[in-house]
Image (cartoon, rainbow, N blue to C red; front, side, top):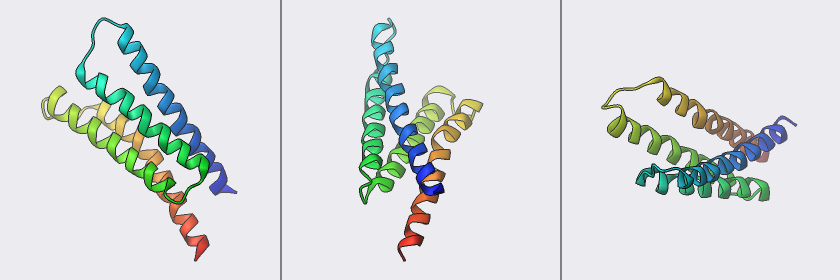
Length: 121
C-alpha cells in the first residue's frame, strides 16, 4: 500500500515538475532577458521529467532507473552550473534547496525500487 502511494506521489512530482519547467521556458521566452543556459536546460529538464513520469505511469521495468537518472542529471547540472558560473566556487542556501528539491524524490525512488526488488525475491 505504501509503495502505491509513494509511486503516485512520484508520478505527480515528475509530471508537475515537467509542467513547471515548460511554463518556466514559456515565461522566459516572453521576457526580455534570454540566457542560453535557460533556453537549453528548461525544455530539456521538462522533457526528461515528462519521460520519467510517463515511464512511471506505464510501470515499465526501467521506470525507476529513468527517474533516478533524470534526478541525478538535474542535481549535477544545476549544482555544477551554480558552483562554477554563478557563485564563484561557494555553496549557498539555494544549492541546498536544489539538492532537497531533486534529492528527496531520488531517495524515495531508491526506496521504492528497493522495496519492489525485495518483494520479487
